Length: 354
Image (cartoon, rainbow, N blue to C red; front, side, top):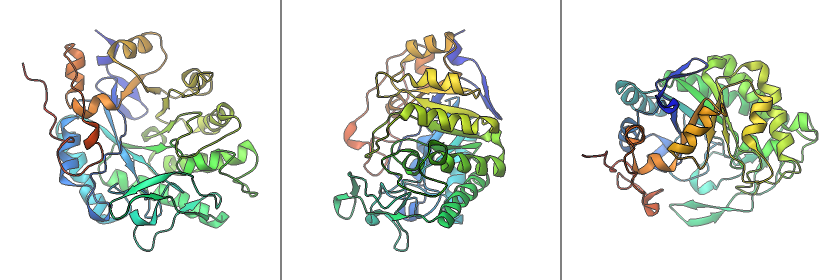
C-alpha cells in the first residue's frame, strides 16, 4: 500500500493517513473574528485528511490584520470553533489550529477599535492589505513592543493554545513564516532591538522559541507543532542569513520534543529547507509546497518526511484523499473566489461522482 495512505504518529496526534491539509487563509470569518457556518461545512468536507491544519487564527485582537480572518481569544470565538472541531471529529478527522499573529502586516481598518499594530521594532512593512471598508491600504506603522509587552504577547499565545484545546482542537501550530510576528523577530531587517530579543542570532530566535515553550507547557509538547519557510521574503521580510536563522530556531526548540515541524520548500534555489530541517530536527517533518501524489509518495519512500501537506489541491477537492487513492482527476479552483464571502468557491466544490 502507498505510504501516503498509511497511518502516522506525530507526537500525540495519530493520523489515519499522511495527507495533511495545509492552513489557508480564506477570509470567511464573521463579525468580531468569529468562525462562520460556512467554515463548519468547509472543514467537515475535508475531514478525510490525516490531519487538518486550520487557517491562521489570531491569538489576540492585536494579532488581527486582515479582513474576515478568525481569532481565538474570547468565549464567543471558542464556542464557534467548537462547532468546527465537532464536525471534523464526527467525520473521523483530526484538526489542529494554526496560531497567526500578523504583527506589523496589518491595518487598523481590519482591527477592533482598541487593538494595536505591534512589532519588534517600529518599522512599517512595505506592503498593502485589503480592507472591506477601504480597499487596498498601506500597513500601519507598528508600535515597538517593550520587553514587558513581549512577555504579554507570549502569554497571549499560551492562553490561545489553552482555548484551542477547550474548543476541541487536537493541537496547535505556530505560524512562523510569511513575514508575521515570529518571523519579524527572527529577521535581521525587521528586528532592530537592543534587548534580549534582538541583535544576536540567539536573541532573535528567542521570541518564537519562548512562544513554543509556553504553549508546550500549557497543553503538552506532543500537541504543538510549528511551520517554517527559510528565506521566504513575503510581506517585506529580509534577512542576512535565513538558513542560519532557521537552524538556530530548530536547535533552540529541539529539547522540547514537539509534535512536528511543518517545513515549506524555500523559494531560494540554493537553500534546501527539507535537508536543513532533517539535519537539525528530530521531530517528524510535514513537507509542504509543490507536491502532487507521485512526488509526495517519492518523498515519503525516501524518508524525507513523515507526512506531506497540500493546500491548493484541497480547495476544489474536498475529497482529495479519495481522489488520490483512486487516481481520479483533480478539479481546479476559481482564483476569483479565494478570499470572497459566502459558500461560493469555498464549501460548494463537489466531491467526485462516478
